Length: 331
Image (cartoon, rainbow, N blue to C red; front, side):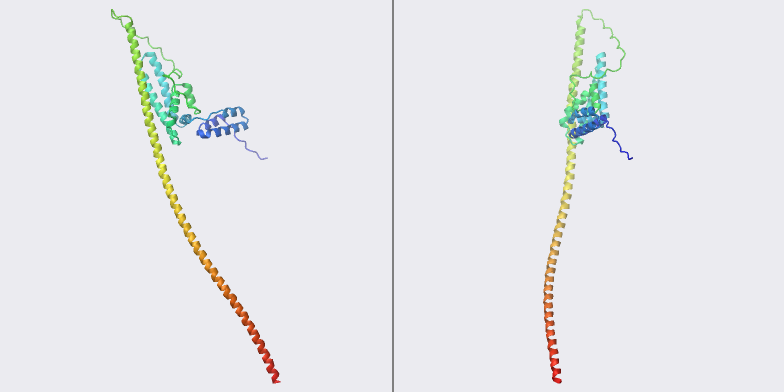
């Protein structure tokens, strides 16, 4: 008895992963088709979950592609975010701001590279990246400071871009492994005689305020640098897109020229064929006329031959009659 092969069971997670790898314009139709196939296979609950999936925005799709196709760029950013969170913890613990500034710089550069990579993926797919740079940057920046957001981005199944982090936004990662307790601060130096007790506290507050102002100023300068780099990257991406468009236009012009040349040759051949056909038709008409003339002449010759035969028959009959008369007279 012949056996029929059974289709392999659907893996909903793998199929959903493939869904989010599709361009957004193909997502809905593929999602509905997957839901139907899951329902036919008896996985009604999974079919309902698939049917509820939202079509990803272009910015979310770009981040999903980044997680799939350039995971090193994403991991560099997330690692920089973790290091920045650790540096913030350390700065709070020991009052040192240098490590925090260095970690912030590393995170900002990693963010720039990840945004540029995602924009490049959009440009390679034929989409203009500039309308989506804000959403891409907000999503990646949030992932760099929040553990749950980082996990969601790694899964490459975002349906929409994430909101940018508010404030300093660097405490969303799980704390680093426990560190040794910091050493107690050294005892304050003896206050000079006659100096008021609150002078040291006021000086410390002023130092803290100045340090915070310096950090905020560096952050503001970093944001301005980010904007400048974004604009520079956008200009480079746009220039590459223009260059590709110009190359495509040159290729299209060459193809059009070749098509025109082939078309011109085809027209010339068609005209030559028509002229040859006209000549052949004229020759055929002349042949038909000659044939008609020959047929008429043949018919006339046939009629003359018939007349000659009739005359010969009459002459022969007259000769026979004359011969009989001569014979009679001889008797």
